[in-house]
Image 1 (cartoon, one colour):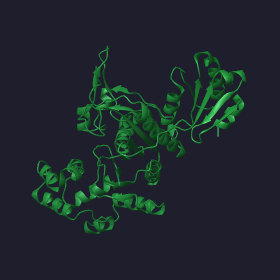
Image 2 (tube, rainbow, N blue to C red):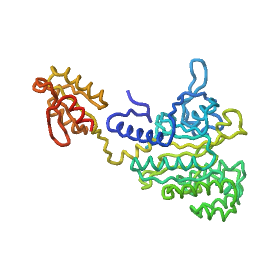
Image 3 (cartoon, rainbow, N blue to C red):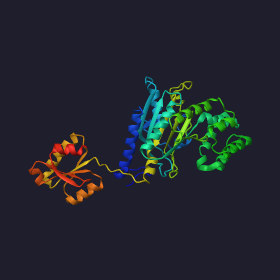
Image 4 (spheres, one colour):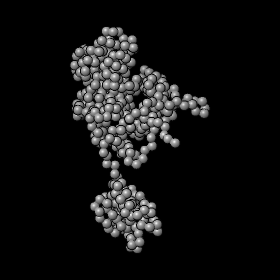
Length: 426
Protein backbone atom coordinates (compact mmCIF):
# COMPACT_ATOMS: atom_id res chain seq x y z
CA UNK A 1 0.00 0.00 0.00
CA UNK A 2 1.40 3.38 -1.00
CA UNK A 3 0.33 6.88 -1.92
CA UNK A 4 -0.21 7.80 -5.54
CA UNK A 5 2.92 9.51 -6.85
CA UNK A 6 2.73 13.26 -6.24
CA UNK A 7 0.32 12.99 -3.30
CA UNK A 8 1.22 13.11 0.39
CA UNK A 9 -0.23 12.82 3.86
CA UNK A 10 0.83 15.51 6.31
CA UNK A 11 1.18 15.23 10.08
CA UNK A 12 3.47 16.15 12.95
CA UNK A 13 6.07 18.88 12.42
CA UNK A 14 5.35 19.30 8.71
CA UNK A 15 1.63 19.71 9.26
CA UNK A 16 2.34 22.21 12.04
CA UNK A 17 4.37 24.34 9.59
CA UNK A 18 1.67 24.03 6.92
CA UNK A 19 -0.97 25.11 9.39
CA UNK A 20 1.17 28.09 10.42
CA UNK A 21 1.47 29.20 6.78
CA UNK A 22 -2.24 28.66 6.18
CA UNK A 23 -3.20 30.62 9.29
CA UNK A 24 -0.89 33.47 8.29
CA UNK A 25 -2.47 33.64 4.84
CA UNK A 26 -6.03 33.45 6.15
CA UNK A 27 -5.47 36.21 8.71
CA UNK A 28 -3.96 38.52 6.10
CA UNK A 29 -6.64 37.74 3.51
CA UNK A 30 -9.29 38.75 6.02
CA UNK A 31 -7.27 41.76 7.17
CA UNK A 32 -7.38 43.00 3.58
CA UNK A 33 -11.16 42.61 3.42
CA UNK A 34 -11.42 39.37 1.44
CA UNK A 35 -14.37 37.04 2.14
CA UNK A 36 -13.95 33.28 2.41
CA UNK A 37 -15.25 31.12 -0.44
CA UNK A 38 -15.36 27.37 -1.07
CA UNK A 39 -15.84 26.30 -4.71
CA UNK A 40 -16.58 22.87 -6.16
CA UNK A 41 -13.74 20.44 -6.87
CA UNK A 42 -15.79 18.67 -9.56
CA UNK A 43 -16.78 20.78 -12.56
CA UNK A 44 -18.25 20.20 -15.99
CA UNK A 45 -15.50 19.24 -18.38
CA UNK A 46 -16.81 21.76 -20.91
CA UNK A 47 -16.09 24.57 -18.45
CA UNK A 48 -12.57 23.38 -17.65
CA UNK A 49 -11.64 22.74 -21.29
CA UNK A 50 -13.05 25.97 -22.69
CA UNK A 51 -10.78 28.19 -24.77
CA UNK A 52 -10.61 30.81 -22.02
CA UNK A 53 -9.55 28.32 -19.35
CA UNK A 54 -6.10 27.00 -18.61
CA UNK A 55 -4.27 26.53 -21.87
CA UNK A 56 -3.06 23.40 -23.67
CA UNK A 57 -0.53 22.24 -21.07
CA UNK A 58 -2.97 22.35 -18.17
CA UNK A 59 -5.72 20.70 -20.20
CA UNK A 60 -3.36 17.79 -20.92
CA UNK A 61 -2.75 17.47 -17.19
CA UNK A 62 -6.40 17.62 -16.11
CA UNK A 63 -8.00 14.66 -14.35
CA UNK A 64 -11.02 13.82 -16.52
CA UNK A 65 -13.84 11.58 -15.31
CA UNK A 66 -17.18 10.20 -16.41
CA UNK A 67 -19.85 9.87 -13.73
CA UNK A 68 -22.54 7.15 -13.53
CA UNK A 69 -24.90 9.34 -15.53
CA UNK A 70 -22.43 9.49 -18.40
CA UNK A 71 -21.60 13.14 -17.75
CA UNK A 72 -18.04 14.25 -18.47
CA UNK A 73 -16.51 16.05 -15.50
CA UNK A 74 -13.07 17.10 -14.34
CA UNK A 75 -11.23 17.86 -11.12
CA UNK A 76 -10.37 21.54 -10.81
CA UNK A 77 -6.75 22.30 -11.74
CA UNK A 78 -6.80 25.79 -10.19
CA UNK A 79 -9.15 28.02 -8.18
CA UNK A 80 -9.54 30.74 -10.81
CA UNK A 81 -12.00 29.16 -13.25
CA UNK A 82 -14.30 27.85 -10.46
CA UNK A 83 -14.30 31.37 -8.96
CA UNK A 84 -15.17 32.92 -12.33
CA UNK A 85 -18.00 30.37 -12.59
CA UNK A 86 -19.40 31.51 -9.21
CA UNK A 87 -19.47 35.15 -10.36
CA UNK A 88 -21.09 34.17 -13.66
CA UNK A 89 -23.80 32.11 -11.91
CA UNK A 90 -24.62 34.82 -9.34
CA UNK A 91 -25.35 38.11 -11.14
CA UNK A 92 -26.64 39.67 -7.92
CA UNK A 93 -23.18 39.80 -6.31
CA UNK A 94 -22.30 43.40 -5.46
CA UNK A 95 -19.04 44.73 -6.88
CA UNK A 96 -16.30 45.23 -5.98
CA UNK A 97 -16.28 41.71 -4.57
CA UNK A 98 -13.23 40.30 -2.81
CA UNK A 99 -12.86 36.63 -2.04
CA UNK A 100 -10.20 34.24 -0.86
CA UNK A 101 -10.08 30.47 -1.05
CA UNK A 102 -7.66 27.88 0.30
CA UNK A 103 -8.28 24.51 -1.27
CA UNK A 104 -6.83 21.51 -3.06
CA UNK A 105 -6.39 21.34 -6.83
CA UNK A 106 -5.26 18.46 -9.04
CA UNK A 107 -2.90 18.14 -12.01
CA UNK A 108 -1.70 14.94 -13.64
CA UNK A 109 1.67 16.35 -14.56
CA UNK A 110 5.36 15.67 -13.91
CA UNK A 111 6.28 15.50 -10.23
CA UNK A 112 9.24 17.43 -8.86
CA UNK A 113 10.18 19.50 -5.83
CA UNK A 114 7.37 21.97 -5.15
CA UNK A 115 5.18 20.49 -7.95
CA UNK A 116 2.71 17.77 -6.99
CA UNK A 117 -0.40 16.15 -8.43
CA UNK A 118 -2.60 17.02 -5.46
CA UNK A 119 -1.71 20.32 -3.87
CA UNK A 120 -3.05 23.28 -1.94
CA UNK A 121 -3.56 26.67 -3.54
CA UNK A 122 -4.28 29.86 -1.63
CA UNK A 123 -5.95 32.49 -3.79
CA UNK A 124 -7.29 36.01 -3.40
CA UNK A 125 -9.28 37.72 -6.17
CA UNK A 126 -11.16 40.98 -6.58
CA UNK A 127 -13.84 41.71 -9.20
CA UNK A 128 -15.03 45.19 -10.09
CA UNK A 129 -11.93 47.42 -9.94
CA UNK A 130 -10.64 48.45 -13.36
CA UNK A 131 -7.70 50.63 -12.36
CA UNK A 132 -4.33 49.71 -10.81
CA UNK A 133 -5.65 49.84 -7.22
CA UNK A 134 -6.47 46.13 -7.16
CA UNK A 135 -3.02 45.11 -8.44
CA UNK A 136 -1.29 47.42 -5.95
CA UNK A 137 -3.28 46.03 -3.02
CA UNK A 138 -2.53 42.43 -4.01
CA UNK A 139 1.15 43.33 -4.28
CA UNK A 140 0.96 44.84 -0.78
CA UNK A 141 -0.72 41.66 0.42
CA UNK A 142 1.98 39.47 -1.12
CA UNK A 143 4.78 41.55 0.41
CA UNK A 144 3.13 41.32 3.83
CA UNK A 145 2.55 37.57 3.55
CA UNK A 146 6.21 36.82 2.92
CA UNK A 147 7.37 39.38 5.45
CA UNK A 148 5.25 37.55 8.04
CA UNK A 149 6.76 34.22 6.95
CA UNK A 150 10.26 35.76 7.09
CA UNK A 151 10.94 34.88 3.45
CA UNK A 152 12.69 37.60 1.40
CA UNK A 153 11.03 37.78 -2.02
CA UNK A 154 11.08 39.70 -5.27
CA UNK A 155 7.80 40.18 -7.12
CA UNK A 156 8.44 40.45 -10.85
CA UNK A 157 5.67 42.09 -12.85
CA UNK A 158 4.76 43.11 -16.36
CA UNK A 159 1.73 44.00 -18.46
CA UNK A 160 0.43 41.78 -21.27
CA UNK A 161 -0.88 44.78 -23.24
CA UNK A 162 2.48 46.54 -22.98
CA UNK A 163 4.34 43.41 -24.05
CA UNK A 164 1.93 43.12 -26.97
CA UNK A 165 2.75 46.68 -27.95
CA UNK A 166 6.47 45.87 -27.95
CA UNK A 167 5.87 42.76 -30.06
CA UNK A 168 3.76 44.76 -32.49
CA UNK A 169 6.59 47.27 -32.80
CA UNK A 170 9.05 44.52 -33.82
CA UNK A 171 6.65 43.08 -36.40
CA UNK A 172 4.81 40.24 -34.62
CA UNK A 173 1.29 39.91 -36.12
CA UNK A 174 -1.61 40.32 -33.68
CA UNK A 175 -2.72 36.70 -34.08
CA UNK A 176 0.75 35.42 -33.15
CA UNK A 177 1.39 37.66 -30.14
CA UNK A 178 -0.06 35.37 -27.45
CA UNK A 179 1.94 32.42 -28.74
CA UNK A 180 5.14 34.51 -28.79
CA UNK A 181 4.42 35.80 -25.25
CA UNK A 182 4.15 32.26 -23.91
CA UNK A 183 7.49 31.43 -25.54
CA UNK A 184 9.14 34.54 -24.09
CA UNK A 185 7.85 33.49 -20.67
CA UNK A 186 10.23 30.50 -20.89
CA UNK A 187 13.29 32.77 -21.21
CA UNK A 188 14.60 32.01 -17.70
CA UNK A 189 14.23 28.25 -18.28
CA UNK A 190 15.47 27.73 -21.84
CA UNK A 191 17.55 30.87 -22.45
CA UNK A 192 17.65 33.16 -25.48
CA UNK A 193 18.79 30.39 -27.84
CA UNK A 194 15.90 28.16 -26.80
CA UNK A 195 13.39 30.99 -27.22
CA UNK A 196 14.66 31.88 -30.70
CA UNK A 197 14.63 28.23 -31.73
CA UNK A 198 11.01 27.91 -30.67
CA UNK A 199 10.08 31.14 -32.48
CA UNK A 200 11.27 29.69 -35.80
CA UNK A 201 8.29 27.29 -35.69
CA UNK A 202 5.83 30.20 -35.62
CA UNK A 203 4.41 32.30 -38.43
CA UNK A 204 7.07 34.99 -38.12
CA UNK A 205 9.36 36.53 -40.72
CA UNK A 206 13.13 36.22 -40.42
CA UNK A 207 13.30 39.99 -39.91
CA UNK A 208 10.86 39.84 -36.97
CA UNK A 209 12.79 37.01 -35.32
CA UNK A 210 16.00 39.02 -35.76
CA UNK A 211 14.40 42.05 -34.11
CA UNK A 212 13.21 39.87 -31.20
CA UNK A 213 16.78 38.53 -30.88
CA UNK A 214 18.05 42.11 -30.69
CA UNK A 215 15.44 42.84 -28.01
CA UNK A 216 16.61 39.86 -25.96
CA UNK A 217 20.22 40.96 -26.28
CA UNK A 218 19.33 44.31 -24.70
CA UNK A 219 18.48 42.53 -21.45
CA UNK A 220 15.98 43.96 -18.97
CA UNK A 221 15.80 47.52 -20.18
CA UNK A 222 14.03 49.96 -17.91
CA UNK A 223 10.44 50.78 -18.72
CA UNK A 224 11.20 54.31 -19.94
CA UNK A 225 13.95 53.07 -22.26
CA UNK A 226 11.58 50.56 -23.86
CA UNK A 227 8.91 53.20 -24.35
CA UNK A 228 11.39 55.50 -26.04
CA UNK A 229 13.04 52.81 -28.19
CA UNK A 230 9.78 51.46 -29.60
CA UNK A 231 7.80 54.76 -29.60
CA UNK A 232 5.09 53.46 -27.24
CA UNK A 233 4.30 56.69 -25.42
CA UNK A 234 0.55 57.10 -24.86
CA UNK A 235 -0.48 53.56 -25.79
CA UNK A 236 -2.90 51.76 -23.43
CA UNK A 237 -0.43 49.18 -22.10
CA UNK A 238 2.22 51.86 -21.53
CA UNK A 239 -0.27 53.97 -19.59
CA UNK A 240 -1.29 50.98 -17.43
CA UNK A 241 2.33 50.20 -16.56
CA UNK A 242 3.02 53.85 -15.75
CA UNK A 243 -0.03 54.14 -13.46
CA UNK A 244 0.83 50.98 -11.52
CA UNK A 245 4.51 51.91 -11.22
CA UNK A 246 3.54 55.26 -9.74
CA UNK A 247 1.41 53.47 -7.12
CA UNK A 248 4.20 50.99 -6.36
CA UNK A 249 6.63 53.87 -5.79
CA UNK A 250 4.13 55.78 -3.64
CA UNK A 251 3.41 52.87 -1.27
CA UNK A 252 7.06 51.92 -0.80
CA UNK A 253 7.16 48.64 -2.72
CA UNK A 254 9.71 49.58 -5.39
CA UNK A 255 12.44 47.37 -3.89
CA UNK A 256 10.18 44.29 -3.75
CA UNK A 257 8.20 44.80 -6.99
CA UNK A 258 10.51 44.79 -10.01
CA UNK A 259 9.35 45.41 -13.59
CA UNK A 260 10.28 42.58 -16.01
CA UNK A 261 9.37 43.31 -19.65
CA UNK A 262 9.54 39.62 -20.71
CA UNK A 263 7.31 38.15 -17.98
CA UNK A 264 3.97 36.98 -19.38
CA UNK A 265 2.89 33.96 -17.25
CA UNK A 266 1.95 30.66 -18.84
CA UNK A 267 -1.83 31.00 -18.78
CA UNK A 268 -3.55 32.41 -21.83
CA UNK A 269 -6.40 34.23 -20.08
CA UNK A 270 -4.40 37.15 -18.61
CA UNK A 271 -5.27 40.49 -20.20
CA UNK A 272 -3.17 43.11 -18.42
CA UNK A 273 -0.85 43.11 -15.40
CA UNK A 274 0.88 39.82 -14.57
CA UNK A 275 3.24 39.05 -11.71
CA UNK A 276 5.24 36.21 -10.22
CA UNK A 277 6.94 35.87 -6.83
CA UNK A 278 10.41 34.40 -6.29
CA UNK A 279 12.81 33.76 -3.42
CA UNK A 280 15.01 36.87 -3.37
CA UNK A 281 18.07 34.88 -2.26
CA UNK A 282 17.98 32.75 -5.40
CA UNK A 283 18.25 29.58 -3.33
CA UNK A 284 14.89 28.31 -4.56
CA UNK A 285 14.20 28.76 -8.26
CA UNK A 286 10.52 27.86 -8.58
CA UNK A 287 7.76 30.43 -8.23
CA UNK A 288 6.24 30.98 -4.78
CA UNK A 289 3.11 32.56 -6.19
CA UNK A 290 1.74 34.63 -9.02
CA UNK A 291 -1.30 36.03 -10.73
CA UNK A 292 -2.58 38.94 -12.73
CA UNK A 293 -5.53 40.62 -14.40
CA UNK A 294 -8.06 38.55 -16.33
CA UNK A 295 -10.90 40.83 -17.40
CA UNK A 296 -12.40 38.63 -20.15
CA UNK A 297 -13.18 35.27 -18.50
CA UNK A 298 -16.43 36.05 -16.69
CA UNK A 299 -18.03 37.82 -19.64
CA UNK A 300 -17.30 34.81 -21.86
CA UNK A 301 -18.75 32.46 -19.27
CA UNK A 302 -22.07 34.33 -19.37
CA UNK A 303 -22.00 34.48 -23.17
CA UNK A 304 -21.24 38.21 -23.32
CA UNK A 305 -17.78 38.57 -24.81
CA UNK A 306 -18.51 42.26 -25.36
CA UNK A 307 -18.67 42.86 -21.58
CA UNK A 308 -15.58 42.90 -19.35
CA UNK A 309 -15.65 42.13 -15.65
CA UNK A 310 -12.43 43.74 -14.36
CA UNK A 311 -10.82 41.00 -12.27
CA UNK A 312 -7.40 40.59 -10.65
CA UNK A 313 -6.10 37.65 -8.63
CA UNK A 314 -3.08 36.26 -6.87
CA UNK A 315 -2.25 32.69 -5.91
CA UNK A 316 0.22 31.51 -3.27
CA UNK A 317 1.69 28.03 -3.79
CA UNK A 318 1.68 26.19 -0.48
CA UNK A 319 3.90 23.38 -1.77
CA UNK A 320 6.55 25.79 -3.09
CA UNK A 321 6.48 27.73 0.17
CA UNK A 322 6.80 24.48 2.12
CA UNK A 323 9.67 23.29 -0.07
CA UNK A 324 11.51 26.49 0.79
CA UNK A 325 10.63 26.52 4.49
CA UNK A 326 11.62 22.86 4.79
CA UNK A 327 15.22 23.88 4.17
CA UNK A 328 15.22 26.34 7.06
CA UNK A 329 14.98 25.85 10.81
CA UNK A 330 11.46 26.61 11.96
CA UNK A 331 10.15 27.01 15.50
CA UNK A 332 6.89 25.14 15.36
CA UNK A 333 6.61 24.49 19.09
CA UNK A 334 3.21 25.38 20.45
CA UNK A 335 3.98 26.67 23.92
CA UNK A 336 0.39 27.63 24.65
CA UNK A 337 -0.88 24.10 25.35
CA UNK A 338 -1.33 22.30 28.67
CA UNK A 339 -0.72 18.59 29.31
CA UNK A 340 -2.51 16.93 32.23
CA UNK A 341 -0.95 13.75 33.60
CA UNK A 342 -2.97 11.40 35.85
CA UNK A 343 -0.38 9.68 38.02
CA UNK A 344 -2.01 6.29 38.12
CA UNK A 345 -5.20 5.20 36.36
CA UNK A 346 -7.30 5.88 39.44
CA UNK A 347 -6.94 9.62 38.96
CA UNK A 348 -8.12 9.79 35.34
CA UNK A 349 -11.55 11.20 36.36
CA UNK A 350 -9.91 14.13 38.18
CA UNK A 351 -7.66 14.75 35.14
CA UNK A 352 -10.64 14.79 32.77
CA UNK A 353 -12.62 17.16 35.01
CA UNK A 354 -9.65 19.56 35.17
CA UNK A 355 -9.19 19.30 31.40
CA UNK A 356 -12.85 20.18 30.80
CA UNK A 357 -12.49 23.29 32.97
CA UNK A 358 -9.37 24.46 31.12
CA UNK A 359 -10.94 23.81 27.71
CA UNK A 360 -14.05 25.75 28.74
CA UNK A 361 -11.71 28.67 29.43
CA UNK A 362 -10.34 28.38 25.87
CA UNK A 363 -7.03 26.76 26.87
CA UNK A 364 -5.73 24.02 24.58
CA UNK A 365 -5.43 20.93 26.77
CA UNK A 366 -4.37 17.32 26.29
CA UNK A 367 -4.71 14.46 28.79
CA UNK A 368 -1.94 11.87 28.97
CA UNK A 369 -2.73 8.19 29.41
CA UNK A 370 -0.67 8.05 32.59
CA UNK A 371 0.72 4.65 31.63
CA UNK A 372 4.35 5.72 31.07
CA UNK A 373 6.91 6.61 33.66
CA UNK A 374 6.48 10.24 34.72
CA UNK A 375 10.06 11.12 33.79
CA UNK A 376 9.54 9.97 30.18
CA UNK A 377 6.22 11.78 29.89
CA UNK A 378 7.77 15.04 31.09
CA UNK A 379 10.69 14.64 28.68
CA UNK A 380 8.30 14.08 25.77
CA UNK A 381 6.27 17.16 26.77
CA UNK A 382 9.42 19.26 26.89
CA UNK A 383 10.48 18.04 23.43
CA UNK A 384 7.12 19.08 22.01
CA UNK A 385 7.44 22.55 23.54
CA UNK A 386 4.60 22.20 26.06
CA UNK A 387 4.85 25.11 28.50
CA UNK A 388 2.67 23.82 31.36
CA UNK A 389 2.14 20.34 32.77
CA UNK A 390 -0.52 19.58 35.37
CA UNK A 391 -0.16 16.44 37.48
CA UNK A 392 -2.82 14.86 39.63
CA UNK A 393 -2.07 11.91 41.90
CA UNK A 394 -2.76 10.69 45.42
CA UNK A 395 -1.42 13.73 47.33
CA UNK A 396 -2.98 16.26 44.93
CA UNK A 397 -6.36 14.52 45.00
CA UNK A 398 -6.32 14.42 48.80
CA UNK A 399 -6.04 18.23 48.89
CA UNK A 400 -8.43 18.66 45.90
CA UNK A 401 -5.72 20.53 44.05
CA UNK A 402 -3.47 20.15 41.02
CA UNK A 403 0.31 20.24 40.73
CA UNK A 404 1.23 22.85 38.09
CA UNK A 405 4.71 22.61 36.56
CA UNK A 406 6.11 25.44 34.45
CA UNK A 407 8.42 23.60 32.03
CA UNK A 408 10.18 26.80 30.99
CA UNK A 409 11.00 28.02 34.51
CA UNK A 410 11.24 24.58 36.11
CA UNK A 411 8.95 25.62 38.99
CA UNK A 412 6.08 23.69 40.62
CA UNK A 413 3.16 24.70 42.81
CA UNK A 414 -0.09 23.29 44.16
CA UNK A 415 -3.06 25.18 42.70
CA UNK A 416 -6.80 25.03 42.43
CA UNK A 417 -8.42 24.58 39.02
CA UNK A 418 -9.23 28.31 38.95
CA UNK A 419 -5.63 29.21 39.76
CA UNK A 420 -4.42 26.82 37.03
CA UNK A 421 -6.67 28.53 34.49
CA UNK A 422 -5.34 31.98 35.43
CA UNK A 423 -1.71 30.82 35.30
CA UNK A 424 -1.90 28.96 31.97
CA UNK A 425 -4.06 31.51 30.19
CA UNK A 426 -1.31 34.17 30.35
